[in-house]
Image (tube, rainbow, N blue to C red; front, side, top):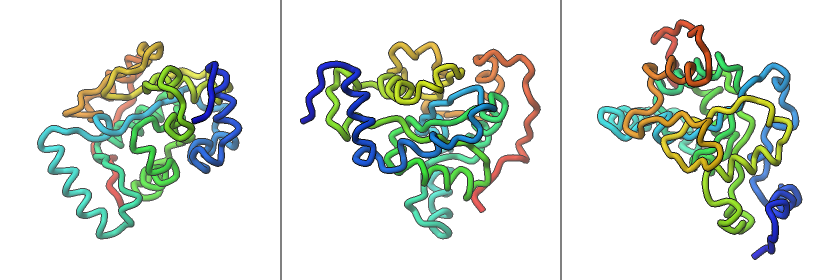
Length: 221
């Protein structure tokens, strides 16, 4: 068990033990983010309850997609997303000029695998910076990092250059602590379907809502 006395100790331990943490996952693309000057927003993205849903017929859709997916691709690239919901994220992300950090427990698959799924297999162009830190890797005490809001704070403290960006948290849970004001909470049974695009953008202060077309929804190739 590593010894921690202050939150600053936690930050320093993460920086000192980057190879032990997540390999390239935590820092994926952050040091070489070519879109940094153009980006205006950081989206901290949950997946379950956002890019999918637990209500019917969503379960049927997800099960069917999975069966088709593993016929073509290695299942290590599978993340439980619904094409309509991924399209909603693309419209929101493009409108907000957003970079994405994966805060979902699906991040244990690795940010690079999620990037391959979203961009290479589904054909989008998301700028996925990486994932939020996992406190379990360094046995960080719960006092310092036990909620998703703590993990978001830790990521922002590791990358202070992003603190001037707007923040949007897409999640179906509320354990965001002081970041709760940035949360757009989705319904776990429905997720981020196209009906919510306008509402999310208004939540972010966007009054000129872009047109979107269901025909633009992409499916894995």
